[in-house]
Length: 335
Ligand code: NAP
Image (cartoon, helix red, strand yellow):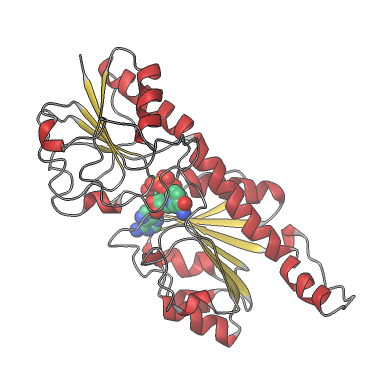
């Protein structure tokens, strides 16, 4: 019987219970040992209260042979102690922490999370952040508080230019929907894309052209050596005046000082930020109090256990039937 080890601190019992139902021919084991942190995308969604659940967590050393591990952010060495490990399944879409040296032993495939719950959640968050600025709702709130009846010039979506950095599972869906609404939409990715109504830019040399004169810059890139600090003074200067930056990729994508300087100069009208270099965002960070920053605590697209688990179970069934694993991370590329 194949063994699946759930190495999550957040709701492990719930994951195990659902896995037993989805894969009844598998032995489901639990170990919270080795989990570094559950901050971020890992699901509070679909959670059950596991307080008081006894005798389920053990040291990874005592587990012995396992075939698959389900992880978020395991500590270095935790996975190396497992015998017979064939695949590591991440419950997050962003897997940069798993690519750090010594976390996942060489040669073991890492499968990242691709599921409908993540994509829907991200789409909702990005649409909310985009539309609230497109239709000036925060500006009207301020006018309301000063008892001002003062209409602004209201534009249609077709009058706004949007650039989505990253056109993968999340960015591609966001771009397609923004284009359907009517926004003048472009994407920037490594390889060219064909998305209805969306202009595709690709390659490092095309990033400034893709962002040129945009009213919204939406970041949904993975964090890699090539994308770290990519949103800097230079890129922000390419946007249209009073643009809005929306970041749900990773905190390491933006040069924080460049965002603050661009807000202060009026180049940016607002920065809507979900992710930060250090999370929770340290209370001393200027983002907390800057009037142009609107932040959410890494909640744009949390992992929803039901859909995430269905994706993992489906992948395991296919793999055991001889099909190739889906959504395997390319370690050299970094995503
Ligand atoms: P994905 O399917 O792997 O898509 C990544 C996209 O980025 C692809 O279009 C890829 O281009 C592009 N890209 C990567 N490196 C590039 C480079 N150097 N130059 C140009 N384009 C590059 O990833 P995803 O599932 O959409 O997730 C994207 C990221 O969202 C995750 O890595 C994570 O950081 C973040 N995320 C955040 C939350 C949250 O709650 N805030 C939740 C989930 C995910 P190609 O298509 O040409 O390969």
